[in-house]
Length: 342
Picture 1 (cartoon, rainbow, N blue to C red):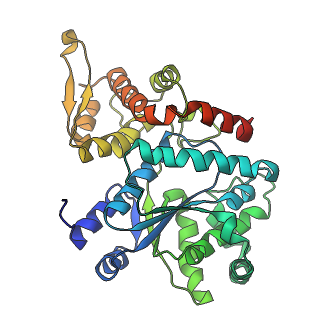
Picture 2: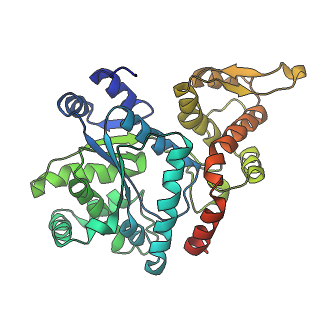
Picture 3: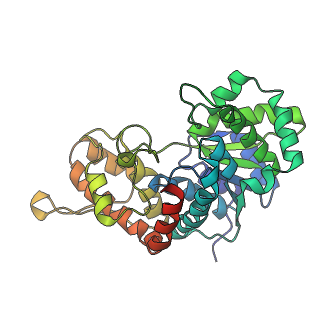
């Protein structure tokens, strides 16, 4: 039987691979005083989930390991506020409701203390909408726009829905009855808006656990709307290898999506399983390279003793392996995707 983690060990596991925790002292206090704290991670069913989603799922796994109850919010109404047409909203929700549990299964997450929540199940209740209206009278248009700027597609003529989005996300913390929220750096401004405005309604501010965003294979962000920037969870092996081979990954420069995915996802999984990361190479090029941590990979990459193509081939192989359990459901997923995305 695994030994009970101390409060300090729990804190370090939660902090691993995060950008920021608002605030660390509040989190330490929570771990000391509450046996089973509650945290949520939310996603709006917009574009198709891609391999970047493995990263928040690994943080969900960490939070479950330290004794949190985790709620995953499939925020269907938020997707509509972010320009998903209302008639296909339910189809998008169905796709996410099928694929997110498969993501967790693919990385062996114990889901005993995990609960899925559909946004519209509680967000249409009168008391919830009353609080949204209440908060809207405290938040300026400028602040709501600023909070939504990295999350909602606003364009040249932004919709009113984009301003409602961050206010609803703030209210979600109260109605999901959580102690903390997990999200990427793109969510930070919304999280700060929640911390500043929930107390004005007589509610507690929550702890915010913020993770970096994994860059895309091409360009800055792994985006559902740019096929070349991401690997879809139901891409076939050949497509995966091709996308990785074509990814931006300049010799000596570790600032790219391939290295980030390796650091935050592949190596995290390997270390938790006490496995090594192997880069296969022909004997004439010095034979295989075996790594037990990310730092030594980056060092070899920077000093150019690890070639980008060798690294890409190894990363592609790992991704193909990771996606195998998800792809067993490919027929069902393809059918759901066709209905949701055409």
